[in-house]
Image (cartoon, rainbow, N blue to C red; front, side):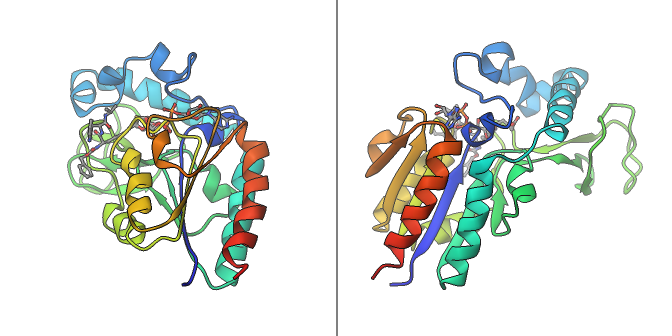
Amino acid sequence: MTPSLLILTGAGISAESGLGTFRDTDGIWSKFDWQKLASPDGFADDPVAVHAFYNARRAGLLAARPNAAHDALATLEAAWVRSGGGFLLVTQNIDDLHDRAGSERLIHMHGELLRARCGACGDLRDCRADLSIAMVCSACGREGGLRPHVVWFGEMPLGMEEIYDRLSSVTHFAAIGTSGSVWPAAGFAEEAGRAGAVTYELSMEAGESGHNFQHVLYGPATQSVPNWCETVISEAFAA
Ligand code: BJW
C-alpha cells in the first residue's frame, strides 16, 4: 500500500516563532473574548474592535519567522512525495509560516491572516496592511465590508471535502501543536484511525482527543518534529 500522510497542525507549532497559542494558561483566549472577536456576531456588533485584534496579530506575524518544525515539515513533504507517497498538510493556523518554510500541499482550513475578503461580493485578495471600516472593496465598491479571511466560530472551515477525502485513505496521521478542542479538526484523528492509519500526537501535553492516538511525543515542536520526521519516513517506506 502506498504510504499516504496527512498532518494537522495547530498554534503550538508556531509558538516558538513568537505567535500566541489560544488555550494555554497565557493564551489568546485568556486575554480576549472569542465571542466578541472571533464570531460573525462579534464582527457585526463591533467591527472596529475585531479589526484592531487582527491588525495587531498581522503586524506580529509579519515580524515572525518559520522555525525548525515548519522547516522540517517542508523537507518531509519533498522527501515523501519524491518517494511516491501521498501527502497533505492541513493547518488550523492563519499564519503563513508553513508557506514561507516551503510547504506546498497545504490547506489553511481556518483561513489566512494575510488575505482580506469582501463580505458583500466575496472578492479575495492579499492584505499585509491594517484593515479598517473605512476601506472600500476595489471589486464592488462597497465601504466597510472588508474582513480578515479567517474562519470564525459558527462558520464552515475551508477545504473540508478534500480533507475528508484524504482522511478516508490515509496510512499515517499526525496532529502537531493542537489541543484538539475545536471541531471539525478535533475529529480528524478518529477519522484517520477508522481508515487504519498509524496515528501520532506531537504536543506539549495530551489534547482533548488524546485517546485517539497510538503514539505520543511530548515536548517543544522545534525538537520533537524534526526527530519524528526522520523516523516516520524511514518507517513508512521501509517495507
Ligand atoms: C506546543 C507548544 C510548542 C504549545 N510545541 N506544542 C461539535 C461539538 C461541539 C462544538 C462544535 C462541534 N462542531 C462544531 C462546533 C462549534 C465550534 C467548536 O469546535 N467549538 C468548540 C470550542 C467546542 N466549531 C466551529 O464553529 C467551526 N465550524 C464548524 O464546525 O462549522 C460547521 C461544520 C460542521 C460539520 C463539518 C464541518 C463544519 C469553526 C471553528 C473556527 C475556529 N476559529 C479559530 C479562530 C479564528 C482564527 C484566528 O483568529 O486565529 O481558530 S478558534 C482558534 O482555535 C483558532 C485555532 O485555529 C483553533 C484551534 O486551536 P489550536 O491550534 O488547537 O490551539 P490551542 O491553543 O487550543 O492549542 C495549542 C496546543 O499547542 C496545546 O495543546 C499546547 O500544549 C501546544 N503547544 N506550545 C508544541 N512549543
